[in-house]
Amino acid sequence: MKPNPQTISITDLSLVDLNMWKSGVQVLMLTFVDDKTLQKVAEAFGGEEAVQIVNVLRGVSETTDDEIAQQTEIRLNTVRKILYKLYDHSLVGLRRSRDKTTGWFIFHWRLQLDQLAGFILNQKRRVLEKLETRLTYEQNHDFYYCGTEGCKRIPFEEAMELVFRCPTCTKLLMHFDNEKLKTSLQERVEALRKELGE
Image (cartoon, rainbow, N blue to C red; front, top):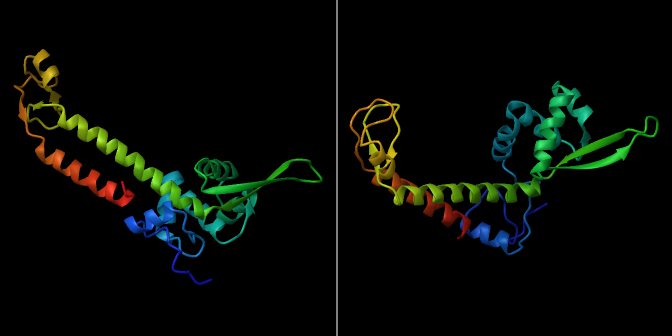
């Protein structure tokens, strides 16, 4: 299957691709998802075992949790737990059928690579939100620090209540210049906004 000019790969999440993706351009996932990206996402959900499970799912259209457990030699309980984590984020889908002899449900699992793009975008938005919150906090506070490794920076209001003495080591608190941190946070926020097209 050849990609047409209107098709994008989700592994190339540049500003142009994201804007095209948002506007409804077809996204080819099954042939163009970067294995490295998929493995990193899987690893985040369940370590090496999740990577093995995703690799099994990648090789078939759908399979049962029992078959995955047999192929990977991972305990069935663990396989199910990881599959449900992936399912909660729509990275795998399932089809339920009933065993005719026992009457029990059988779950047939499949990888949903087309959902990977949305998952990555949501994660980037969450990171952006946290970075913006941290940047605002850093911009709105003056900090004081004793210079001792392991001690925390103290906001001005709290430092005043402590009479500018470190609550951990009792050394004198001195003004802490957080300009480098603010600059670094600002750069990361701007880069993420640009990536997300915001």
